[in-house]
Amino acid sequence: MGVISDKLVSITFGSSGGPNISRATIDASGNAIAGDAGSGLLASGDFKALKVWSAVWNDLADFQLLCDDLVYGKCYFDTKDGARICNSRCQMSVIGIASDTYGMAVGQGANVNREVPIAVAGWVLAYVDREYDCGTPLTNNEKGELTAMTLEEKRDFPERIVAIYKRKEMDEFWGPESGLKIKVNNRHWVKVK
Image (cartoon, one colour):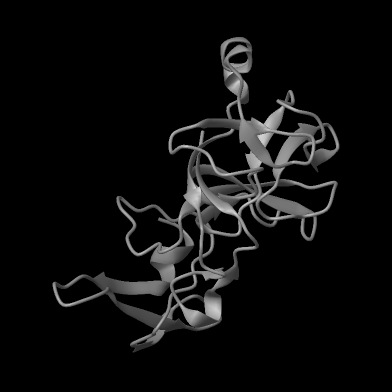
């Protein structure tokens, strides 16, 4: 199983809480010389799991190359040079919404300091031009915000549906822990498509 099995002694799960992780101290030759009850686990390389619980944030993000400003909640479109904030309505090549609410992500680190986390599944806080009925299909406008699609846009460009409207977030901050809360900035909850 690669690097993780060389260092990990055991992970046990009980009915009274989270996992109990034990790890071994490894010498320069890669031999286990002592064990401790580590409070965390640093894994490099491949790590596979059947299920993952306790991801308290809302969406799954895919990091993409960024060649514009990073504004969480704005819509981005793809170019050969990287992602840019959308600048025309119902834009071709729209890739999604920049997320600061993701619980899991892939692709981070490929372009250090030049990446945007694009929500690919789940619920995300986004800039929307106004409140809509729950379930309204949304596309991007010329400011990178979301707006309701027209019947013609839904018929002619169904691939450009970016999200489905849920509601405006009324709180000033959102997040499960006080130290990790994010500023809402008048954004709305949408389900990414």
